Length: 194
Image (cartoon, rainbow, N blue to C red):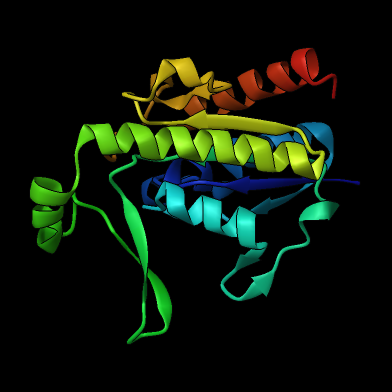
């Protein structure tokens, strides 16, 4: 049986579906796995910054659990907004996140320590690093983003922000997840010959 690895933020996790009384099994990652008869490992969490997906992939660990990266047949990584970041809290001995759009204390970060220039560099480093790492692993990669201001020159495989959304603040609807899954399946069939 094929094994597919997914990581990203709530758009990959199926965020918004349960809040609207819809089954999480409607998320696009699950639909893709069902189509290809693959086992799904989905590490995505709501609000996850780019750093989190990169940390999981590059360390092969999630919540102190080893992830046998060599066992996966395909990697699906969804990048989030570059202004979301994570840091390791020495006091609590765990990884924590901040999102300038939600965390009040992060206003100074946005005002004095973050710029769109920095965001573009973070995005470029992430895309090139993830692609190089998957190539080193010898595994195919499907790279997407829901960030509507993403750099089009980085050749993402899919821009998710264009799909139908729930009224919860912007997550994909069941119909949106189905359309995303159909486009991913088409890409995998045509481009990767799965």
